[in-house]
Length: 498
Image (cartoon, rainbow, N blue to C red; front, side, top):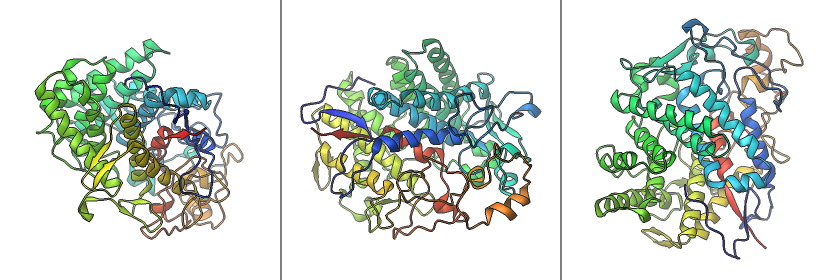
């Protein structure tokens, strides 16, 4: 990405999570929210924990992952409140963390959190390097949701299956290969100056994975049936291949091949066809369209510019839908009475955090290029976009009808019965006595008391369409948190006024 332009006197500084709220009577400590968000990823670590592990209620786990298959798959992240390592959402988590650092590295450093952000990214990419055992083989998953969900155990006590699943030439998974390539390409940009050897290694893996995914096309859930009930690839693989190509274009210092791929495949892969109002671990089109639209000003020839304009049109549809600025009500994202973007019942906050990230990034892009957002109902200036993004952050942190922070550990009132095995059972470091599957359900899952361990920085699924929230451990649609919920929070930038 191009370096951020110097801001005007009206925008004295950019500091992550450090601005007075707009149209809110409460001033939030965004720096504290940033610190807690990055701490959350340490709670989700699998493998042998490092000496500087700050979440002390966790211990080593999954130390034999991959052993049955003769490959080292120790490490990586658990996606949510269970202990399966799902490759697709893990890769998206790392892509979003990397994008955050690419856009706002200096501001994260000023907040004193850059090293923690880099550690969070590298914990994921180190695992991807292990999982990519040969050019056309990528290990996609460790464990399976069915057996895992029969158990309520700490990760340190796991007795469930650690079967590992892979994609290869005969069992393709272009979506998984594409997202993992995107994650490693984006991360290679992050480490380019501080760790050039590691950056080069990541880029090499990313290029191989992209070539693998493009040559042997297919959905990964068609090759790995056990994933269908948990992370089915509804959008297919074409969005991930476009997404990976864009990140490789950036990571290779604008190598023409990758941009030509995005241009030539724009129509047949849906990049300029799909008008989307969500951005998630599954559906990447809005992210693709935003990234591509920011390349428009540097188009090298007429056809390239024409296609990039179409990408921009779809990006603007997404952004306008979030801002309620499309003409038809059906073309806008619904909102709760309290003003929260509302996509669907299960884990709605993931869509809120990704939307706010894209809105924030695009508002910065428009401001730095002296442009405005063109919506069907009128032209929107960057400040209005940023103002709405801030309103969503403020809702997350407590400016909502429940007066509750949905970021665990932040503020005085937050969810205390998060649907999370490790957090809901006494810490292994405090009590190393083995806790079995049914014992966990009998003695811990059904408890009405708060979790003994606070899952600091976790962004839970959040309230329903009427702003109601039930803080119950079995209410997993609302109280479970995921890595890809919190990851986009790291990228929120707000303006610091004089």
